[in-house]
Length: 103
Image 1 (tube, rainbow, N blue to C red):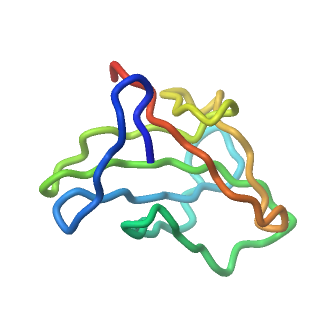
Image 2 (image 1 turned 90 degrees about the vertical axis):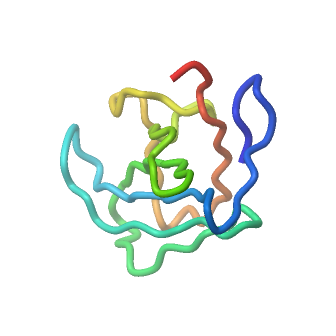
């Protein structure tokens, strides 16, 4: 995972990423969450391949949320859900993401 203009984030037991999955709505629709592995990978199972989903990534350090952004359309995080990229489970694609700096 990389932070725009600020270098790489290091994941450990104290600093980690969580991905929250939401149904394709303007608000609400929380489905599930998972923690990202230290190599940057994560897996979500049981999603309906017909539905669209928004992803929210949260960088947590020592139990506190440091950054929380939606996965944006251009691989850079966005603060607004309206600018979030829509993902489908059936796409089975790699998700590239960089936190927007300055949040």
